[in-house]
Picture 1 (cartoon, rainbow, N blue to C red):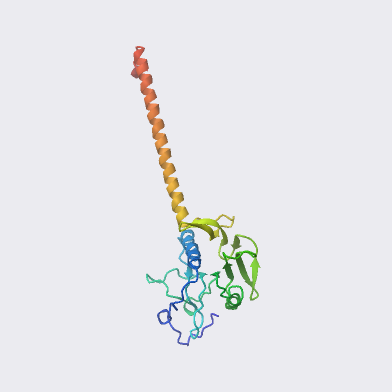
Picture 2: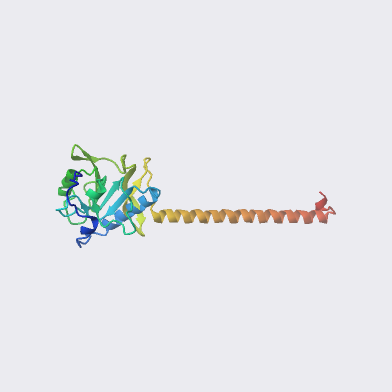
Length: 245
């Protein structure tokens, strides 16, 4: 896949189309990857050697159209090239296959469990994740890992991905003000990472709690001062100068 002849004239990023104007089938196909990317931006804030693409073309052959998964994760590549960001992901420039590809199934079958699965295995993507919110009789989340050019299904929720250093799974939560089942990243202990909304809310709660603790401390100090003043006045009423004690 990555063996390109350096003598070939391969097109650059600017020469390749970055959109085919195909609409997204389902709002979840953008919202779920958005959530995953926003959490990664917090968890890996100090790291610049990863890239998470959403509905972006992956070019693998200069003579063929790009493949466009709903999302993909690459490690060991530049997070940003410049302020204009990537228009697409070109393998002969990046020289790194995405380690994970994600498909969020819409109500229209697009071959996520058949043709795309076989295609992604052929490309050699290590992990293939499929999420289908509308599935009832089978697991809504399926995480596959490539073994001997074939995808094998992992059990569990969340599923730990050692090569990435994160787990991925689903649970009910609220994102963008929408309460429903969402996909999240997890640590090795199975604890999920907070979304930016949750992190902001938690920070606000901690600030509010700190303010309340300061107010309580101030009230206690004020009450203690009042008690001392009452005691001084009581001593004076008994003919005792409190300053001489």
